[in-house]
Image (tube, rainbow, N blue to C red):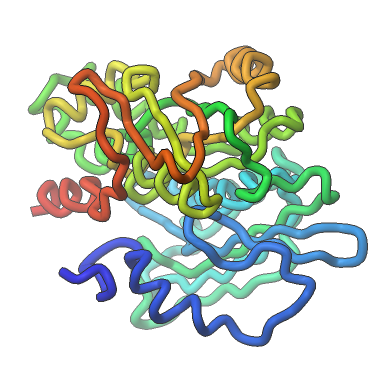
Amino acid sequence: MSEDKLPELGKIHPAFFDRVIYPQLGAGSPDVVIGPRHGVDYGVIRVGGRYMAFSTDPFFIVPSFGFSKAAWFGFHIVFCDVAVSGLEPRYLTIDLNLPPEITESELEELWETVHAEAVKYGISVITGHTARYTGCSYPMVGGATSIAVGGKRDLRGPDRVKKGDRVVITKGPAIETTGLLAVLFPEKFIAAGGESFQKDAAAVFSQMSVLEDCAVARKFRGVHVMHDATECGVWGGLYEMARAGGYGLRVEEEAIPVQPVIRKTADLFRFDPFSAISEGTLIAMADRKDTNGLIGALQDQGILAAVAGEVVSAAEGMKIIGRAGERVLEHPKVDPYWILAAEFSK
């Protein structure tokens, strides 16, 4: 399929975005500091002397997770994209377009979890809409906008990245792919590797958030930009970040940590973990002077992290150094998670 056409599943291709969405963004405003662009998860406006970052996502509820776990995941999906701005997440607006079959007790459980997570992170719900409608179905049951607030010095973005910055990656690849598939299709994991394997893979579910990662990274001024490796995973995230900032990358594949259960998942189900959706994996470009402190602070919080490369000039391109030698970093375009989920659902 041509890249400037709609894909069958998943996010639209960058070429389609550039052709259809990007040229038509409504009225211009000098208050828009960061608008829609590839590789940036949030938009930013200036209000007086303060900066506000916004990110909008579907509110994603999978009943088979159980409504508490499903709401936890939905909440963190919404806030991870704004947390990487460097500003502090503070507010939530939410629209719940619920399917007719949802019960009062299920909605109560869902909302109690949203409230608990909001209290935990100091976030206030400021407006929303809640209703049941014919035609609405799981897992997309509405949408939400997360809002973060701070000063100019707190804001991170692609324009701050400079040559020599280090590439820091937390948790490793395929976090979301492993966690979601193991919870949604436990029988596939048990058949492939046994009950203990399925249990270990399902435990990865709780890693699908970068809110804690970002809270640590915000303390380091040398962290110049952050990105949550969602669609198309680590390779997709790195490609989008470099394109957004107009710089090159030199990435050491062997330096990227891969958790053993994720390596086993990728081997058994035959997919490239670095191309797979990985909500919970934070990619940051940081000044080399702050890198050791950042890695140490992340590890102190129990967050796996490593330096996996450096920023180079745009003229040097985007390169991956692996066991087989050097190759060009290209956008994967197709995320293996969606293919596996479709196959497992049959």
